[in-house]
Length: 98
Image 1 (cartoon, rainbow, N blue to C red):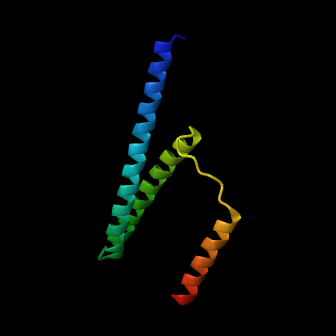
Image 2 (image 1 turned 180 degrees about the vertical axis):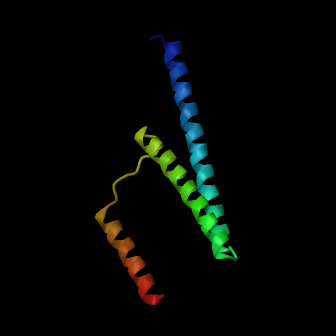
């Protein structure tokens, strides 16, 4: 494979990565918007419809995330035990005070 083909493949890969990153960002915005709409529904029937849509959007977001993670484009470092313990303590305190 010559240098030109290598460069073209790298550019295509970057374009794919940029597209998936953009799609994931959009899905995050969409789920946030549907979540707000769901919280403000006046009737249970409408709320249930928005919950169904919200669930579908979360599933799409998870698929996009999984694909990016599989390709190494969205690394998730292992959490340090100290940080896990701090997060647990924080939320336990919130539940006790709430």
